Amino acid sequence: MSIASEFREFIARGNVIDLAVGVIIGGAFGKIVTSLVDQIIMPPVGLLTGGVDFSQMKIVLRAADPVAKVTETAIGYGAFLNTLIQFLIIAMVIFSIVKGVNSLRRKSEEPAAPAAPPPPTPSEALLGEIRDLLKTR
Image (cartoon, rainbow, N blue to C red):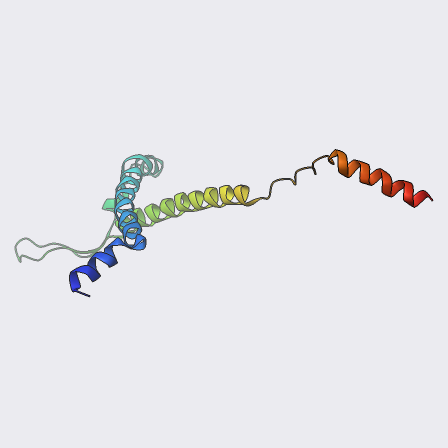
């Protein structure tokens, strides 16, 4: 078997295609969540906290000195808070999706109520009557 045919067989497997689609959709979903957090959720949170922009919050360890050409060294905890909020939103959305899918699966897996048995055919009814008559003798 040649390398090209092995590669074609590998790519043709459903799992590889599914994984690729998942990665692409995950990347797009990440952009949506980033936009949701940065442009919709964080402005009201910043307003509630007195107009603070979380992404700019930091603890300066060493101030910048343009004369000595020293750049600022800081711990950007605000960016971390934004990332944490994004993670929590993603986790909530994925939890909701998984919960919904599991609910749909349970509904589709529930066995339907057993159907009532069909009425006996005329010959079965006649045999039943004969049986009942024989029991009474």
